[in-house]
Image (cartoon, rainbow, N blue to C red; front, side, top):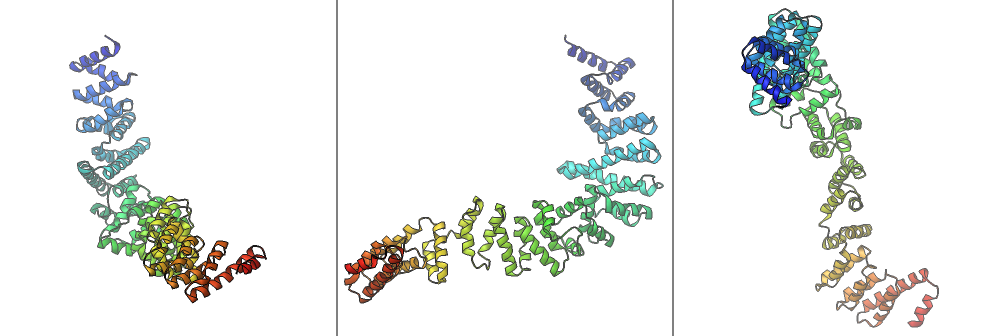
Length: 542
């Protein structure tokens, strides 16, 4: 039999024995250096029901594992009597160990005993008692917020009971020499609609009320912050509460105020938020938006909408939102867009387009089409060169329908200066645009051939499509031949020149006239670009 088996067999023998010596041995085992033996002894003592043994567990609580401490929490009724004996009648060392037990096992049921101890305790014991009380309240508040379903209901019931116990302590006994912890505990565990919390702020003594308002003004405990913001959910909010909410500026309160902002406010909430004429920390500045986590920006927009700001302040917020807020916040701020002049909003769009952030640049792209920017199509074309794939895809989605047919239609109504920009846009969106235009020039429908040729000239793409245009010089329609000749006049190449010279016997006088004019233009252009004797060579051939 190895050493561990021998120890296990010995411990089981001690548990089966009902002699005083066996219990003494188990108590002694609580103090040995082997954790497994200590924990096993503690479990056996708890099962035995010995009050003296449980007192020894309390005295040695710091040596036991978390599993054994959790066992104490589940068996609170079994250990309650010896625990209270240690708290109220033990020496200072025993009291401190009992306080450790209450804290470690999260024994919320012992709050009344802690309050009783706090009334008479002094020095280190009082300090430790206050600390344990605060940590129990912290734990209860956190567990209530995080738990779900049946567990949350149980914790909520524990909260209500604790609030009543704290209120009883304040209202029944003389003012404690440490009332602050009791008052703060109520405000941590309660919400704004809690009846006891309302009595604390309205019906308690002046001294207690002063402490309560001071806690609301200064405490950064999450529970107190929740109480403050939940006060905006009730039917009536006192002016003093509104004043505290308006003037607190610690970052913890700011974040809680934002997170608590209702996206679908009730009637009471709408009325209460409108009573807030401002929050000292809520500023329409770039620094403010950079300070706040981007995921909270939409709720900040909602907070601004709910509050009672005058028109100039709301307009300044509109500027700051569309310049500095996260994109989800800008999308949620449609109401604010109407507060700005179109040119002011367009300036925000331009700023977004120049951003290094892909999401911001992509948002700017989505706003270009509905803006009054004079060069909106060029702005979109330029974004096709963005290093951000998200931005490029956004531009392609917006301009996806800008195909050859749409470009031809646009050419018929646009200003001449738009032509080259339009060609740039078309070629970037559709790399096959040249081939598609070439096919349109060969379309059997006369009007489509003519419109396409004119659009090509408008976009200054005649050089790229010169071969397809040359084929139209054989078209049966004289108008199409004449238009093509006029277009080819702007393509000064020897091939074009030679082809136009072959039109001297074209059956249409107007085509012949256009050819002569085109030849003169090309000759002049070639003479300027190449040698001065080109003109003489051409005349000899004529």
